[in-house]
Image (tube, rainbow, N blue to C red):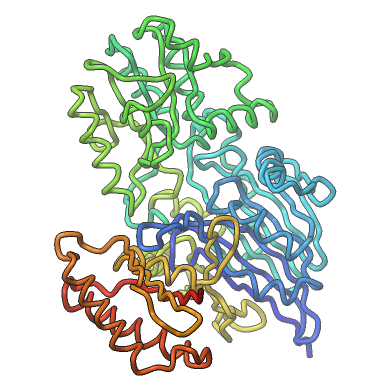
Length: 553
């Protein structure tokens, strides 16, 4: 009896949008071969002060690294490759990616001073690789970045299709159209399960084409007589090319603003794209020409504090400024969670008497993910026996399962991060176990766990402030006046009376201890801390992070 299993296990991206990391395994209990598909990040919000990047905890696969055949990357968005340079040093395996993704991967490792070239294996578009029992075929799709790929994963147990991120764009402008022929061929040979993008499951119709956005942008831009500033996702090279195309049609030059814009432009050129557009102007040169002859394409479409758009609107950018009568176009969607900071930025633009154009007012953006009609196409081409929704929150994946039933798919399974799914053998995929999963937070340049003391302390500091007390003792054990300092505690309540009250409390507490006995210091510190925090709590409502020092002279 064949005891070998085909296993799927998401460590990130299932039950959340972002941080995509998926594992596949084939073999028996004692000898399984593993591959990783994507290693992405998600971005922290204000609930985790001091943290920018979050990525899936790779501990489960690190324990199996001797059986790991490689990391396969579907495309170059940060939520699919952003964690690669943080996770790879613990794995040291080969990485497989198409040319454009490979260029951006090299840059990530270069920043960390790691020579990844010996381990980075470039796969040509629609190419094939064999990793142990896994025969993987890259299938060209369309998305909002260059070279998006689905993966046909063939094993002795059967074939899977991992879609990655995609949509059906009949006119993607840059890159090939979706490889419908190959998808149909895959479907004709029986697909055990399709692991599929769920992001836009609530949207009817189709996601739309980049060509339609180009035509709309041209119409909008041709009516403007002053400076035009456009912000978009830097990774959307087709949108970037559309800005160059429209600018040329209306007699303007393009200036790229922001590191990411320049990085993506350079990577695209290196891979043979964007060769039909004029070289962009340096922002320092662009400010020397008439405002009706320039289009700025900027980073910061999500209101990022260090993004070019924010700096321009706040009048702190060294080379780009904005005036009454100019036009700002947000050629992007508002990512859920960014509404507050983006609407604040929009308000700042309007207050400057600058025209604001967004997806809420005009047709200036299309999504890179499949709406329901796009999904119908994929289902009809592939005809999977089972569907496993990923790349979505629980509500997205639940709706995707309802949709799969409408499409007459025999089996659908809702999962979340850490679920170990046995796809074969069995009549249909089922959850058989739970893998350790969680999140890692990049704190500065150090990865820490979700329950890290540094994060807990920083949250406490941000909510309640900081109190520091230094007890100064002479050699004889005599206590001098304590030094009390604080930060982030409400000033109007924190007056001298509270200082005096704490001083009295400290002197009274110290009288109950032998100040010469160093063995009692730990208990003394704890009691002083508790009593002084209580005074602050009673007076201000805050329970500050408190630090007590003892200095012996």
